[in-house]
Length: 116
Image 1: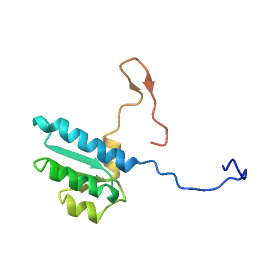
Image 2: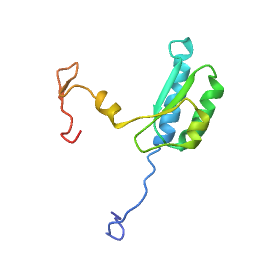
Image 3: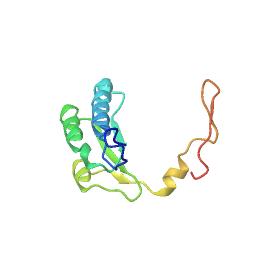
Image 4: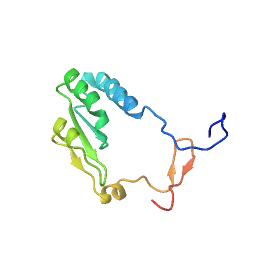
């Protein structure tokens, strides 16, 4: 909604998700420098992460970084950077969901949508 002309419009809003993921990956790599983590798997097919992954591989060349491509997603760019990446199948989603309802430590119950 434009407050000046009072009309609705469709626009693009940059959420900076790629930057946030790349930054968090680098943060986790430094935290894992104690040898407690040797592999990172990112569930994405977004090639916008390629520069962050290349930097991460330079900074921590001993850490294995792979991609789990969501159903119907793939990126040849990411596959070149991390050749041991793999595709997820719809059965992976079903087999790895939390119990329904999920009980949090504070006793709160979370219910997943019926469509899941």
